[in-house]
Amino acid sequence: MSRKMKITVSIEDENGTTYIEETRVKSLPHIKEIDEQGFKKSFNELETTVLETRKEIFDETVKQYMEEISKKKRNAK
Image (cartoon, rainbow, N blue to C red):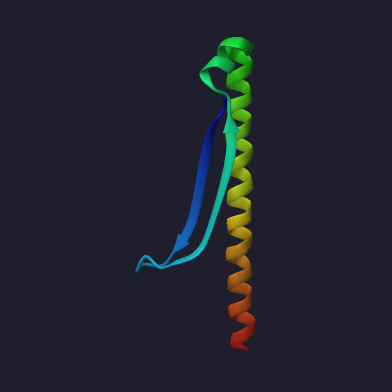
């Protein structure tokens, strides 16, 4: 049985209105799996999952934000 990690990134204005929100959910090893695989292997799996997911969600959020800025600049012309 695994656990899940959920990372959410949102871009909001000063009033708290959310413009962009991205969420990613990934499975993490359960304590029993850590015991079976060994701590070192499980920690490496956990660290890799967290870092890859964080990069993925931040890249996607920044991309969406830049697209919004680009749309607004094109519409302003």
